[in-house]
Length: 208
Figure 1 (cartoon, rainbow, N blue to C red):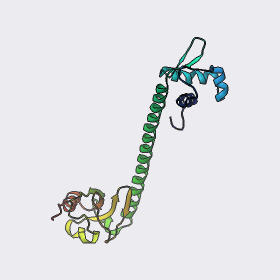
Figure 2 (tube, rainbow, N blue to C red):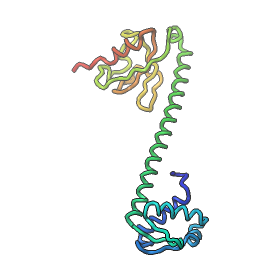
Figure 3 (cartoon, rainbow, N blue to C red):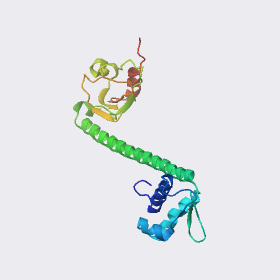
Figure 4 (cartoon, helix red, strand yellow):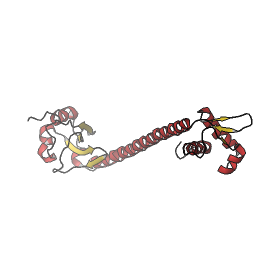
């Protein structure tokens, strides 16, 4: 595939493109494998594999004398489109793998920073247990558009805001002026039952 495509596939695609470009017309015959090997500077075996790919897709035919006959411009086009689609799927899969890797690294960094904050905070050290929980903010939650300071979270729930996840961004120890947005994931710590109390408080429906 992309970056690691076998050379014979690249040659097959090049021949198909040359057919589309009318360098090789339907019904015409092109040079045998030995001459093609010289043109592409590869072994005859590599050319055999390339021609075999095209033959399997009815782009060309190969006679007993190893003469190659062009069969179809349309099939040459379909052959190229097939591999374009394959490359696109592969590229998307690679991109997803990279994103997942980045997310794992971001999560690990987040956990490390969060642990460090907990370890160095006298107030948080006194909380038992102090495991952080994440609460997703619904778009119609009454706290959307409010600042951390306006929430008066400690008074209402006994929780402390540690961080805000916003897409791929992580805001560590957001100040009182940090504004809550829809779909934020707010990380809090507190005593037993903190998730339920804070989740209910955060996601009360906004009254119009």
